View (cartoon, rainbow, N blue to C red):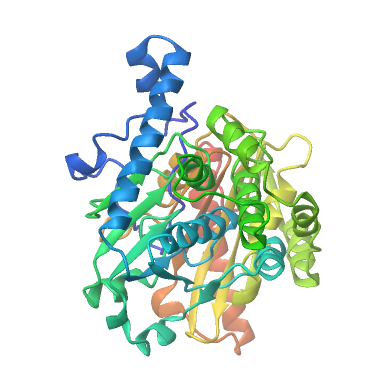
Length: 426
């Protein structure tokens, strides 16, 4: 495998135990993607960074105008805004911004996700701002009358990380808008497409829409202040507290600084960890192995609602001295759906390690060509359905044996890249 020094973010993918995700280099309609060049190519064409930034601003304005025309063509409709199953602050804040922009054209939007909010900051963000996102399980969606929706929208994802998309497509609801900052995941047929992998956060793209006048923020309107606060949190989250931000991210943050509520954001960021999250972090410390500056830890079984404890544990392990990359994984059990999946998170401070490339090479793709995971700058994740082996953990000897098998398999796939000369299974 080749570790690339490029810091281009890539789509966080859902994973099974085979291999599943559309290749990043899949062909996409030329008309849709011809105006989404890399930042490097823009600078290269113009010959200097300043001209490159002017071209980037021009592209942002052009995309804003295209979105304006798309929304005008769908006035008075009702749309479904679909997030990844486990939305982060970037996705939540961007979707809320889209909803407020669409409202200017008398378009009503419902923001939905299929998974859960378990990270304490995400829960605090939604509760404290009143962010209008709804959890729709597959059963909930099947009972809904989808005929009232004239289109659906993907924000901070391209449909590969949401269980809702397939059902919506079966209902023949057209895809109208896709806005994302991850690499292209496949052939997307959408009326409007704005995919910019060189941008660190989708919140940055939506802030640029605001700057272009798609919605005039007013600091006297509480909803606008709370949405700006959510955008600031999303931007901050996906740029690692602005430490990995680029010029467009700083410009977006500067614009939001005139509207956001610093005290509210501070309250969101100070949300305490749950006892279960602390227990998972403790397990990761006890079970970790460290090789070649990689810390790898399996944490056993977790409840579905505690899934976000896994990335929190990875965030903690990567702070250890002499560790530049941490991978934490566990088996997550969804009692409602009677499903089990292996879920893992990667965090790295090593600039030459591409999380997207590393995870895709480690776990590959399933029989349909879908990768089990992916990543962006400094972070990544994977999800591997257990299929036939999914089931209740009432039989403790069987549950223990099942965990040992998956634990050994995950370690083997990771360590063959981390330390290919060693036999990973002792």
